[in-house]
Every structure is written in structure tokens, then in C-alpha cells.
Image (cartoon, rainbow, N blue to C red):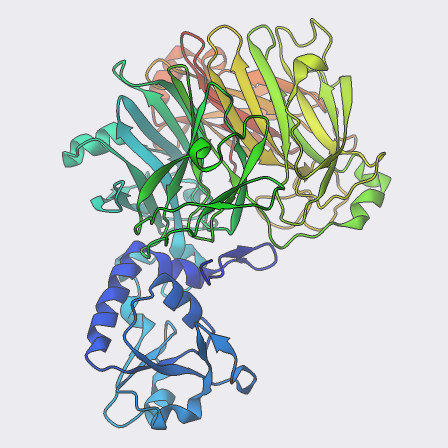
Length: 634
């Protein structure tokens, strides 16, 4: 387990982690270590408690004379395998150099210099600070300086990837936004580094693997793309949709969509499906750091078995490794689910399911380590109605089969007391099924054909919601998750996604619910990104108006068509019933001329100031090919 702090729900993201883990910081730390090695041993002064993270992410430090602290409460505490010593011992430490483990250290330097051994070289982490050209704000550890993320990126074997987002930072006042990009190959080698200028306004951004490969003359690759948005405002999170698709008739038939990678490495991930007898499931392990993942560090476990099987391979820095789940866990089949013990080495991993000449890409989710069951959820005020909901689409049953598999998504979860409610587009509940108080190691994957009347939602589709139901006991923590699998009845093509629960559309609040993208709860507005189709693939969205308690009878949703510069060139209104849903196809709503003017970097902003909608988006192509994942907002 890497001794780093990344993200927790109370404090948010740890900026120190991002400052030390950036690929350019990794190169600068190596240069700093090389310089200090000539003056070893080195005393490491740790005023902010970040030495453990520094040495975990960059362990090739020169010999240390000790770790020194100024807080007397920390004297003797273990840190990075050493016992902390008082700063007053520095002069007698025998060190020939002092490294101050802090950024913006000008104020600290004089007092350290007064205590350092005579002639000792003194350095700080300012030596590994990113260049000014990559920092939008002068204060090094401003979170907006590190709007970064990773993307699974491939252009190989007839399969390409296309990342789509928008300059949503412009909506928060950002100017001159740029993207610093670095593409890593399968072995962790740097294939290309470049910058791209974002549109001046909230225009679309497209990074296509085919264009990148042609621009830099690259051989086929499967690796990861690191993104750093420079000049961000409002949001330090880089959100995107990533399409994976077949090109030139080569390779497996692929059309999949996943979203941003969640830039904070976690100890565990859940929601990885075991393969069916006719499937191969590959977990793509992509090292998010310069330090290698040692052998027998990452492991897979059948959910709830508590018998993890380690991966024997070493994964070099920034490298990508495909792990065949069946080889590590033979004999485990769908609907069993698998837990990934990642040790904070990777951001949210992707997985690939290969079946009968087709393949699909999806992602696992962060398994929370900080959550405990919340007894208050059992007795929430009726002002919050049904409380936490996990809404998901039921695609038109004429063509699609919809399957739901609840996922434990916190280390402390032992039971999942759940009910399934199903609604038609008008918001009428037409079916329900009590799922029981499911154990952590359950094997339920429910085909909604088993619940719905024969012709219900045949042509229109609708949506379903998982909700807590304690009639058979059980515990809840609000972190309800599920894997959602959709299969085309004729072609056999499939898509899957996963997401978690929230309280929706109540003016009463509970903790941080209903969540808002900006400001405190309640979140009662919508701003969702819907990218347009490309290469003959139709874009669509399944928009859902979930309501924990009765709210406005219908939404007042505006669909705003933006061009590549971010200008709104057309808009249309749609109205969705409370607890209802709608299938949205931009090519049925906007004229062909307007869509052509928007261009391939154009997009639709789903905006509603009257309620909080939730949505899933994807692409549809010929021969029953389609993709689906949940939408992101900003």
C-alpha cells in the first residue's frame, strides 16, 4: 500500500499528492535527488507531514540522516520507516545537505539555515515545482493548479479512442485555458508531449487517438493519456467522455463509452464483473505514478471472500498491463463480482469484456474505506421521501435487455437492503421488486424482463430506481452502487456502466444531499454534457427526473446546442414528468444545418434550473452497436 493521502469526503483532494505525482514533478525529483546525492547524508525536514508521501512516490532518495520535525508531539513518531527527531538535533545530525519537504519555502529557509550543519546545502521542494507556464495561480498548492486526470488511450488493432469534453472552466471566468498532454505507452515510455489551446469560450474539446498518432508518427499503442488543464477556474476536476470504437473494419467490433478516470488513486475498487463462460474479462492496470508497482502488490478477490490473489507481475512507472481475470481467479463466473485491491497505485481502472468477436470497455468504482453504516438512514424524516435513489434507464425492450447488479462499494458494507422501483416515461410506477437484504458476497444480477409485464416499456423505455428497503433488516450508508448491463437482443452487442445513489429533488437536506455541483445542498438544478455523434454514430441520452419526494410536476429542460467555440446556435425545450424519463436524440431535435454548424466538437448542454436531472448518454450505430455510460455535469 502506497503511504499517500489522496482524497476523502471531509477534506476533498490532497493537493500535495497531485503536486508530487505530476509526471514533470517526478522528473524534477529525480534531478533533485541526483544533486543531493553528492552531499549525502541528507536531513529531511518535514514541517507539513508530507515526507512519507514524497518517499512513497519517489523512493530513490539519497541516504538520509533522519527525518526532522518542529512539532514536539511528533517527536519519535514513525514516518517512512524512520523515527522523527526534533529540529533542534539538526546541527548535530552529520548531514551534509538538508531537504525541506515543503513548497513555497522561502519563509522556512532562514530558520533551517540557522540550525543546519556548517556548509550544508539546503534545498526545498520548490526545486520540483512545476514551471510557471503550467501554473495558473502563483500559490503552488492552489488546487486549481492541478486540474489533472488520466484517460485510457488506445490506437491499435483496428480500435481507436476519442476524448470529448468542453472548456467548462470558461463559464467560471477562466481565460486562456490550455491543455498540457503526455501520452505514455504500454511500457510507461513517453510517446508524446504537447499542448493544445482550448476555445476561448465554453467550446468543445476533442482529442482523437488517430489524430495524435498521425501528428507524432506513432506506431500502434495502448497506454494512458495524462491531461493537465492550465488556467482552470471553478473546477479542479477534468471531466470527459471517452469513446472507444472500431475503425477500418479491423479487430473486434467495439463501440463503448466511459467517463473520466477520477484522478485520486484508491486502496480498493469494486464493480468488476466475473466473466461468463463465453467471455474474457481483462482488467487494465495502469500505473498512475513514476514509481513501479512491486510484484504481489495488486490483487483480485471475489467480493466478500477475503481471499485476495496477488498479481505476480511488476508494473513499471506509468505502464499499462492487461490482466486476464480468469487466470488469476479461475472458476469464478458471472454473476459473481470481483474486488480490486489496488494499493493506491492506480486511478479508477478500466476493464474490457471480449465476447464472440465483440468487445466493450467499462470502469470499476472507488470502494470507500471511510464509510460506516449510518443508522439514521433507516429513520430519515418522511420529508425526504424515499431518500437515497440510484436511477438508471430501462432501454426500449423491443431492442434491449436491461440488467442490474447491486455492488458493495464500501469496505464496511456487509448487507445491501434494496428494492427496485420501475417507472414509465410519464412517471407512473408500474412495477417493483424487493431484492432482500443482500449479503456482501451475493450473486444477484436481475434481468428486468423478470419483473416487468410482457409489453411494458416495449417501444418507449423508461427507468428504474434502486432504493433502500429495510423490511428484512440490514444496514445502509448512502453509498449504494450498481453495475448496469444492457444487451441488444439481436446483435448481442452489450454496454455497461455503474453509478451510485443520491437524494434527488427535495428542499430538505441530509448531510451533503441533494448534492450540488456548485455550492451547498440542496442541488436543484441541472447542467449535463451531451457530446454529438461522429463517424455516422448517433448520439443519444436517457434523461431521468428522479424525485425522492414529490417535486415539480414536470421539468423545464432546455437543450442548448453549442458549436466548437462555445456559442449557442440553437435551443429546444423538453418537459419530463416527475419520476419520469425521456430518450433524447439530438438529430431528431435539431436541424441538420444546425448540427453541421455545431461540428464534431459541438455538444448539447442539458440545462434545467427547476430540478436536478440525471442522465446516461451513448452512441448508436448500425448492426445493433451502441454504447452507454452516465453523463457528467459541471
